[in-house]
Image (cartoon, rainbow, N blue to C red; front, side):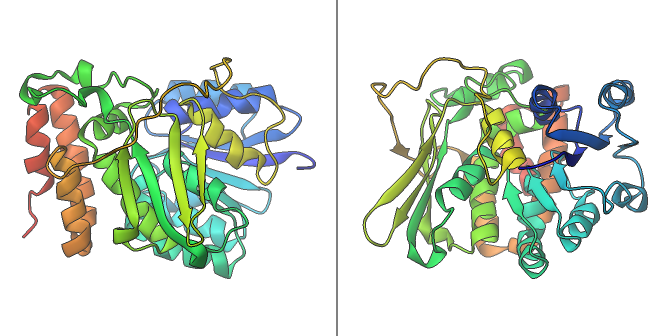
Length: 336
């Protein structure tokens, strides 16, 4: 990487946005923030714009026409750290302009992943997934042919309720307290229900074209191994690191090089003597995962409705209007 890379960050005031900007602060000679967007935290957004000298800032309530103006010829890298489909046109514009696009937005990939991949190939753009498991697959597949892949495995921590049976009694505070990861509210609840893992399976299929029967989820409470790729010759690649999204963010920011220094907050060396558990995800153990995957298999055209229902269900749960174990039923509202 040579010279300053101009960045536009969507979702700048969220958990991922904050971690991304931590890296930018450490390497001011390599990155310049030229555009920022946030969901609704205007005050924080204005503070960040002042700190980083961003020339453009917008809230997500802005029109799509305003949002796409954040990307122009001066921009090198668009980071989509938001939720929902509101940034689709912005993403398409950046890819069409052959910009690098790094994307943590699950909903966008689930609903439009094939479109994004096609456009990235046509315009020779770099499309880098930021979700830890998808990013790990991206790293494992560098220099490999997809035709040589026999199976991929992504891991799931199981969230805070891996071994808890009385799910009707859990509180929003407990659901937001993930044992390994620091995440925003929606992603934390999706991790607790394992909706997030179903969306990741769909993302693998969308981005890589690997059929569902060759994508496996393994429960891995330690969150050290993030993905495994098995090849047709019997060999495998595994990517492992302490759970910290700054690893994936740094990979995308410095790609195709590596970050020049340690990015993780965990300064301890990787413990190679630590046991690694990778157990099968049994059907019925996480009903929300089963529900989303059933829709993906049988009614993929309804996935956008499931995503809308999930967003509403999480808001209702966090407000105390529904119980945690009612989220699964809510996912199917309006789906025939």
